[in-house]
Length: 212
Image (cartoon, rainbow, N blue to C red; front, top):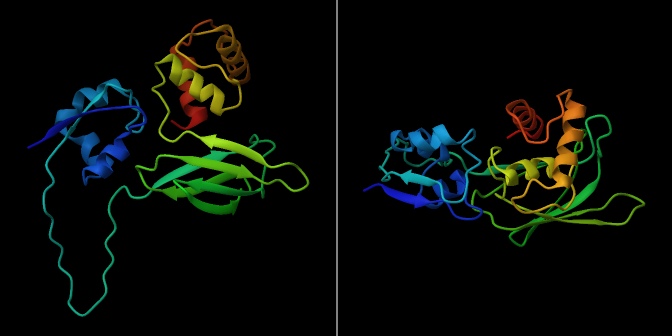
């Protein structure tokens, strides 16, 4: 029988699908989730309290020759984490880092675009990042996995402005002066009219700049 999962804090479609043996695409495309698709612009950005219908798993058979080794990959696994440091004009390229996900350290260097790209389990919970730029102090960051709210919420607006470097530590559900000022800066940089509340053009530009 299908079940209905109520989205909790830090849940996403990929984590829910992973924990129930499905790919996120199976859940997103399911006819009983039509209301969810209509409410959300992205399958990967849900809101706490959303309802996701999870169908029963169906067995699938694959033919494979005996006496040989075969590899099967589960759809939607792993997920990808991507973080950019610097700006497109001045990327922080080649910076050594150690990204620790659920206690497992993953060392590397940012690429030519200043990006860190790694794969992780869809239900990974915690991540910490240490940047080790040459000749400078270490930088420590707590990485919030699956904490992005939809763009039509104030929290979603703040998350994207913060991730893009326009906003500092403002939290909560209020459209406070710091958030409005950060939005004005983003609008000016994006060639948009200045507004004191996010309009459709600002939301669309934020989605494009942020990637989701």
